[in-house]
Image (cartoon, rainbow, N blue to C red):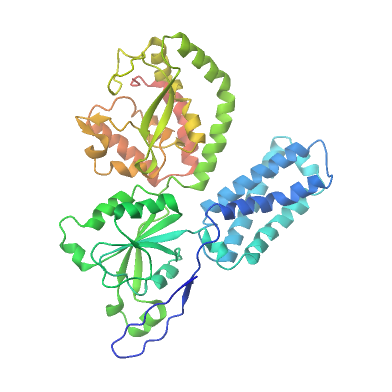
Length: 475
């Protein structure tokens, strides 16, 4: 347990002591609280089933509760139910999300003529008792456990951290555990937090633990740099699932009494929660549910396409290729083979009328049926149903790689690549022949990232089929 205090700074005068802010090491991972809430929601119906409340509607009843638990936790997560540190606030969001979801699903069950869910004797008592349990579980947890899922904070500074940084984090309700500090110059003195050696080590924290906030500490010395290190790092961080803040130490410019009460360090948001990231729990839940359902429904079609590809000529049925995914990490994308098998041939982007494409491949490419296998990538967590289309690392436009052609191109790696996207439904698909075409695609991708919602994903999915059969620019 580490105790962090705001250091008093004054010129000979005693400063009012700031209240100590206690930073508990997390004992609950980012997924533990949502999993715990799902267990709490399911415990009463499962207990009732175990005690012999069996009817012919029991399977439907348990399925209803499983769906209810998943959507309630997803709704709570999208409204900050697992990021706020206040236990009653967390419990209230989760309980309210449960009630809203329950009412919506019960109304849907009535409309779909499934009265068996409502005929069970314990349905209404279970629905009434579960929100109470969700609130009580927050009281039963230790004070720091309810906030532990908020993760950790990383700090980038020149040679020192503001002494009131802990108070500034608490004021903004940010995770108080500082996982590491990256100094851009030699530190004045050893700090209380772990020191990071370079930017690469800072970025590694995103895969090793739950980091959702990065604080850049402003320093006048950085303004004199032609190529400020923090500017390059900031551009890199924009591709990661993080909120970014700028810290100012205003102690010398604030009245002593105000500094004593609130601290002299103030945080200004640069990138906050309005931008979707690859870790968004609601988007991930939507992807898994819809992709799994589509895989089941499309299984016969997948089998027919596989047989047709096998009969179309020699070579594997499934084409595997490395593509660039979230945070610039590569993954293997799955597609049905649409070109003649030519092992050892160097990569070349498919072009309109490409002679390498088989007759069957032209049909599959025009309708995008060759990409149905990417539903497997979605279930595995490498892709999303909707997002920027992934590209091969070797892809170029006008002789320049996509990554180097446009300064903001890496921003699209903030989310997982998608099977379809806003650019695709606007007809921006197929070969990228010019920088202007790449700029238009990037503009659509960034617009999607900035305005994401489940409703937008659904709208893009619904618009995808007409586009697939109505566009003539697929390679």
